[in-house]
Length: 468
Image 1 (spheres, rainbow, N blue to C red):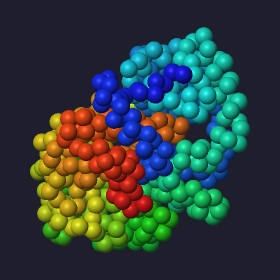
Image 2 (cartoon, helix red, strand yellow):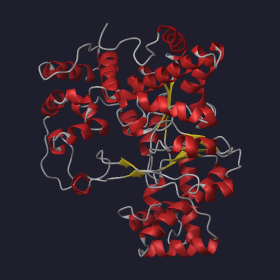
Image 3 (cartoon, rainbow, N blue to C red):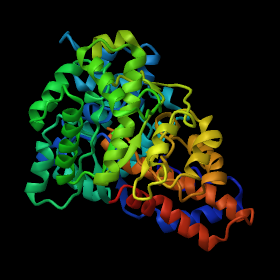
Image 4 (cartoon, rainbow, N blue to C red):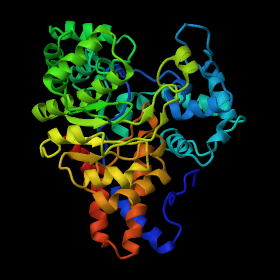
């Protein structure tokens, strides 16, 4: 046996553990549905070999480099490119050695479980990473990455991925998605419409982005009607390439339901560049409602990811840009914030709005009761810092009593770290089976029902919620 115990994440109690094993054995080989993530569509379009272990396993994964940064490792030493083009470490072996030196920092974290499962399942490595074996393991991984069996498309098939969705700017021409479709390869890689760059007035280059949006759609995006028409056209462009969802990463869950005159006046101030912070937030709130209206018309599933104070570390943002591991959870209101949107579309049965949170205190107080009532609402899985064993258990404990299992949407991995996708899904399946096993052991659920729920959570709910 390698580093991975077959009973990991299962209950310690023998009776309950045996139930969890039976449930897990029935779902562990189901295909993976990855309806929301951040892998690069170029990988699948070009199908080139991944360059080296550090570029594949360390640099794209904020779970990894944020931990090292917290212990004093400069991002430059990890090879993360600076915005000003200043020198950073270019020797990937040196980056790997630094990572190995700090591997002990990940003890007890889900990152360690994901990483070690990736090493064992994909590369056959059954020993713990240390400074002493770092070079040997680096060479082993590098040699295997050079083989056709570990190219992106081959891994897609090896992972038993049925479908994966990327996250794409509305200004993206989706050329790599077009290349994938034209290649004849059977893997399903779908875009998702992430319009933050042309919805958030506080985004750098927002006004330039509006102009580009207008050029792409031949609409006057300086006018409210033209701006909305441009969104509709870009959404149609994405749908033609397989998109089934939108995604919105707003600071809060605030929504608005303004009159047309109020919306036009607010948009005019936004376009002029003189909108206050309050007006920018109000505009984002109005656009969530507008996006929901459009989803009623075109069928795109809507995802809302609020409650992250993004780029909290100003120094890192200035030096390296966005997504440097400094996005921090905030307390988030949903009951009042979502009411304007729900007043408009909350009872629409053909609309699906999936709400995520980084504020666990809102699960039982707000989100589960809302999703347990409004037909359009579904709960997204534990997200980011909480897609960990304890976070997954708390999620089920706090939401099931009010929303049940069927007002949730299964699991999505939400990652750029391609090789961790199977390990993340495996963790979710193990945690859900452990939760269900406890219900069976306590005579709150029959085992045949638990088997059905386990399959739904692992596979069916995500496919249905995201129209896949």
